[in-house]
Image (cartoon, rainbow, N blue to C red; front, top):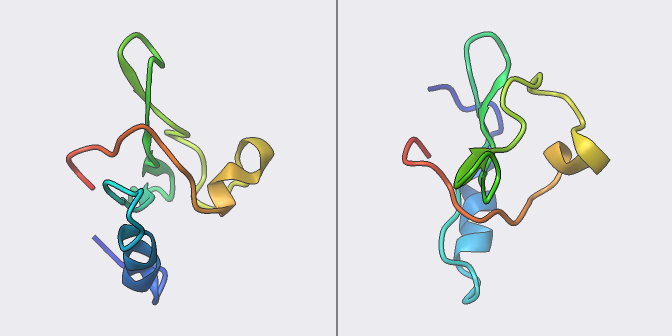
Length: 79
């Protein structure tokens, strides 16, 4: 793993301290610069599916969702 955002831990802790938040997780990018994890959505692809897998790490995503903090149903074990 490689950290690409110097204040990543502060960003995660900012949300983790909110009482309504159960878990936080990062956006993970593979060696090819593509997203390998960016949150899980319950009900997608049957029981659970991943959001934005294979998109370029700097892609905007649908309605710029890859550029901002998001609420998701779950995070994977790799997070």
